[in-house]
Image (cartoon, rainbow, N blue to C red; front, side):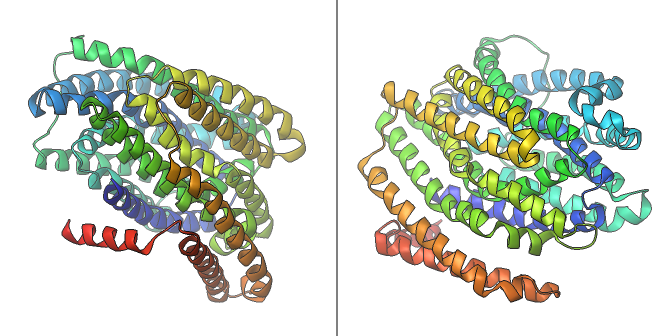
Length: 516
């Protein structure tokens, strides 16, 4: 499981590095003005629906059932089930796509009402979203193929697909911007092209695995009925989560120009550890637990969950500390150039620090929620999400006035901790999860190592201030690299001294990777 997590995490890291290059170019060409706000709304809306219809509810319902089919009935039965689900998915997505495209201005009035006061920004948002929204159908099929391949322990293709998206968007910025009215136009077309590229790539890999999917006559077979029964609560739960994200877009659209962009740039950095660690762990853990539970190995499933939580926290805490202590130099060095000025970097850094408060909770949620999904319980996370979203949205409304977009990020972090705490409590009460001796022993050690890193970063930031604030990009980047090296070195040394990471474990992992 660790080997697969490292593989998925490595590919995701490569994607995020390309994503940063894309964001650097985007910040330089778009800045944080009306065109940028319009594009980011157009980019976020199909991704909100993607999380609802694809990665969130869909995978939580599909992967455990498909994995169970593979274990119990074989590949042919599993393929038939996937064919039926694909047909249902395409029909639903086409209906949604046609409805949204037909009523795009009204749709935009609902989801970005603040844009209505600025006609040009509203017009661009409608145009950009009309271009990007078909991406939802393509990326939903990508998620289906990814669930199939992940259940077969072929994690590479699904993890590598976002690399294609970033390459397409970088190409759109470099090649398409001179050929279109604005960089926002070029990026919107790049989003659509990236969906095509990702779909073709995963379909090709599924064919190599002898798991090509094809549409069939739609019918409510017993397997599809069971899938829909599990999907219903999962969709509701994902919908509640998306309400919180929609609330960010809705409320930020009513804030002064730039708020949407500040949230976007801060979230892009926050998504780096969440994607590299949280998504990698969740992607591998769900089929792992599903297969163990289906085989009657409950103890093995709980052990896998403990190790996933432990690994998630060990790798996430350094990122959270770095964002909290050094958020301003990180944002300034990465994005402050061209149309993205010092005030934009400062506002984005404050937003990033607010997101960082909830980063450990967001990552742990990925492991905790799989304890329910692997047992085909998608209803309990809905009740938990309802409580968390209620607190989240109430805090957004209370904090948007005094703290602007920073208040939205604070509310998001508080909601994440409520969600994680309730999930852990319910799993424990039902006897489905208990923190074992190793996890309990290592939690305070993680806090000590993270505190040592925070102190080192605070001291190093002061010493490196001349470099981090220099006019030359090379000096600023060099200062940031030195700062990162200091923080990681202190954390790594503390982790080894405290016994969080044992050299014998690293040696065994290297030997396993060499054999693989």
